[in-house]
Image 1 (cartoon, helix red, strand yellow):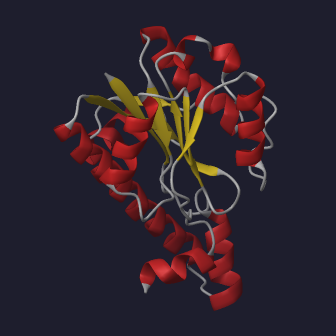
Image 2 (spheres, helix red, strand yellow):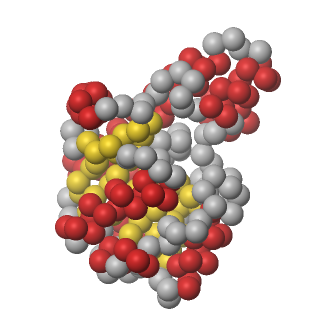
Length: 213
């Protein structure tokens, strides 16, 4: 059994896709840029959860929706709407803290874990199947993103038991060297690592154009 954790923010105008919304306003002069950003976030989340749902029907995995921006009751209702009824809150803190909080659920159950976000319009089942396959022979699997971060993090069966070695401490989250720093941290603990194909997160107006066209 393996868990796939979808890190999702409630698509509320002004509280999600802020960089994209600013681009839509500054470049296109759209007065409703926040609302458009929220609608794009909603579509991306529905796409991501749809891919995970389809994979769960074909493989023995446990899909989890990790929510920010909602309380527990509303998050539970959202999970039901998206078809991922197992819902947890992300909680407070920077990304590394929130990732660790979710991965600790796998640690307590000895369950390998994949974590993905909802910024990837190109996400498809083959990406996740490839990640699951790589976790059979590697401690860590990363999906590099074009902005220097990563779109997927996988912790394998051995590494899930040793949280002190997870490469989540001292990472400059949100910057262009997240992947590089994560790989250095993994190397320091002799963690075997596999990289998936590079993908482009949808964060800016320039990312949106090829998706629409």
